[in-house]
Amino acid sequence: MTREVAGLIMGLVAALILLTMFLAWRRRLRRDAGLTAPLGVPEHADVTARSEILYVATTKHDEPLERLAISPLTYRARGELVLTDRGVALSLDGAPTVFLASTRLLTADRATVAIDRVVERDGLIRLVWRVADGIHVDSYIRLASGGPADILPQLERLCAAAENGENP
Image (spheres, rainbow, N blue to C red):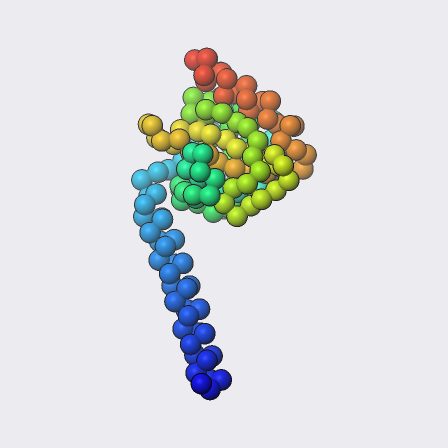
């Protein structure tokens, strides 16, 4: 086998792998097209805290390696987490603001791994929320400065308020 033939075979294998990856991602986008995150912050929501974040991913509930392509939370991005008295806003660069009302939030806790991101023990915040009736998802964020302990108590209070039927 000549060097040119070997190079051609390697190029074809690489192109086949890239094509397969592209088609798999397109299929995932079609599969999750019916799921969308709620947009827009309520007018009279009082901001209680702001934090710079890295949005990592949204996955199926309790399956941190199964990414969901929920619009506009499809791709990893930098942004800001804004806590309000009514819920959590995710203002991600290049995307509309997602607002998770406290009535949608189920729990907030710590995580170590999500999709292709592994961090120090409990370095991620996992938000479990209801994207549709009966469909729960996990969204993972990482604070740009400070640790999860800085903001987790406030997130847990929002989840508890929803669980107790309070309307903050």
